Image (cartoon, rainbow, N blue to C red; front, top):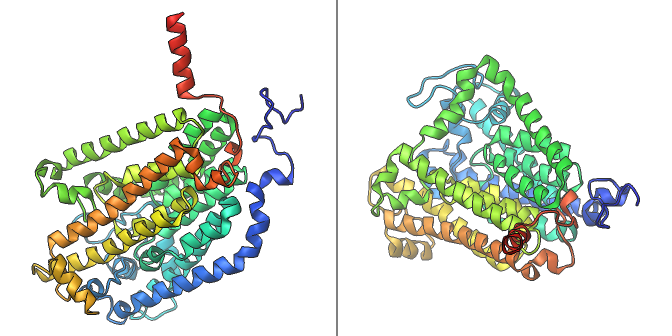
Length: 483
């Protein structure tokens, strides 16, 4: 038996078999021809996203103007509120504040903010805030291009479709510049692309950096572990975990050692934060579950619900008739985290975009989901408009009449109309999860596997045989008990 063969006759995906084994289904060659197209389309959408924010930028991002026109961003106001205009260094320098005195983002996001602040120093003091916003936009647009190309690379023969599903997303246009989320999104997409190229250590390094930019990529360790257990790819799993831990520590440890209070702010703020707009708890607290507004109870319910869903995903991954694809499980675990979360900001749709394109590249459900995200995007801003103006806002019918008259609800929308927008997003995301579960349980309905592929983004998992399957083990236990 050759050294690249396993005992069951399959080629061992953990051992390189030459150049062909290093790329998922020849994606590298296909992608080279698509790079100009995908880069151009993404750049155009990012430019349109910048233009969408201009009515607010010209008004200095006045809050009423931004909520009326749906062009809000955190980037410009936080430049001033977090002390960057005074050249305070994130985590090391404190600023005046009621809730916290240090930047409340993970370390790599704070470093990103600091680098941009260095870049805008040649501008005059009065122009520096807007320069900070515009330079950040340029860098985030580059990260959007990286995200699209990495997603296309990991998609195998569906590179063009997957890339365009991300690049042409209305949600990318609307939310790319609300916050710094594209940093973590881009690094996560690169991690998946590296894994698809059978580079688990590099994938781990990139994933660790993504976690250092935003917490949510840490959730993806669970799908990697589950699928490596099912296929017996222990070496690849070890390299991934080691790379993740090493890069995360490399970025975080210096700040932990020399600016502990600043480093800890993100984690303490996440723990003590209450119900925010976008969360399903925002509705539930007004409909008979007032107790969830208490923070300890809220954390218990949210974390407990996620833990149960993650456990169910684990059972699904290990017991499904055919090993699920990596993007399917990544999408499921992310949705399981978002649905019961106490915070669900509009830009979190960016977290889902690459995974939806890889996990379920079908347009009907994708378009319905995007419609739900658009409804919520404008719903939250118009609701905050009515809150800031301290008026009731228009009801659902009044809002629809205003929009059909090609006008904007200048006094915002009422609570019930906002609930409709919130549920539109919640239900469409839940529908995506249900469809992915159905594809896992019935692999013949999976669009990727229907084309004859196994798991283009799976790397060492692609075409790997099962060495552990839960239903098979349970069957063996039942046989032993009856013997």
